[in-house]
Length: 500
Image (cartoon, rainbow, N blue to C red; front, side, top):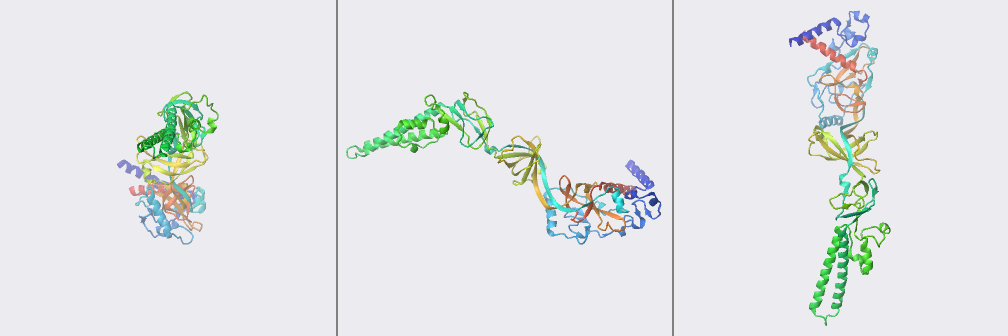
């Protein structure tokens, strides 16, 4: 502690002998020699507001604003704003600022900090220009606040079908390749399955039995006086049993993916019926290419369940297959998923339905979607929360496995208060800007007020000011780092003087 105090005393003695070169360092040696010149602040001593606080405009202090987190709050006290004319603030502006402050946890200013009472002076406008300070107007504009997260595009898993055969067999013909576009119901491959042949045969037998039993019953029913009642009942029971077996055989074909209705066949002759059943479930455009003399009746089609793209093919003709092996993967790419990994602390800000914009690596154009799911767990290794957005892909330009950066939009402010990003500074305990006095262009020393602000959304060029500024004010933009340095240097001078 003694060493620190000794160091501060040494700095104070050095500053005393070097006049603490301040903003007025741009004045000439002749100015320094003047007896009425304030060497510390670079203006005429009688006009130095730092040395004569009673000369400061706007001497009334409103103190700290608990609502908006700044001192001398222009939202609550518009009269502190350095604008030409009378500043106006609506209740909607105050409510919006309060809502935005509650939406996301912001870096808080220190209520005990007194830097807002400082007035930084130049002897002339030319002196301010000489050190590179350029004015920037406080304006209203569009600002977007968002959370940024790395992400990857993938297939919508509710639109991905992994297809296999329903019964063991051998791949007889493979029609589609990886990358082919397919339509719903289109045949991808044919499997030679003995179970299919047996099911077709049972159906034909059951169908024939129903026709036979029906004829027997009808013939007996026409002779009620001659034929015994018991015989008629037995014929009716046999007909019912035949119909049950037909229904069972029909269901067996449906279970294999070969739906049919027995009523469709009516009174077809057995040879026509067999011909219809032979290539059941196959499109005529395909069966016309087969030789009926050598083509098996055991063919089971593997069909696309939806429009899409074959993203995987794991079968070749002649290969033995069963229902445990995936033969094709078909994905409907008209809608894709975007998976993002969000920092655990930011996940509490997310709700389903928020807009999402994604920029793939190497691409300039953003893709828009909406947040559809937020995980209820945290990734063990990365300590991030997985979230998902749905992206429309009608033209099929999005590709699974594409990496990039996503922005989850928390809010869009059309009339946000905006300043250039170089105008906002962190001075150790508060965010500040340097507001130009509204009478800057009149004669006399040129003033900049130190104004505490609460920054919000940012983009490449600008910063939103949630509280602390009003449209119409003018701040130091480019070159304002000079004012920050002078503010910090004079804060150090005050500490050294106090230590002495």
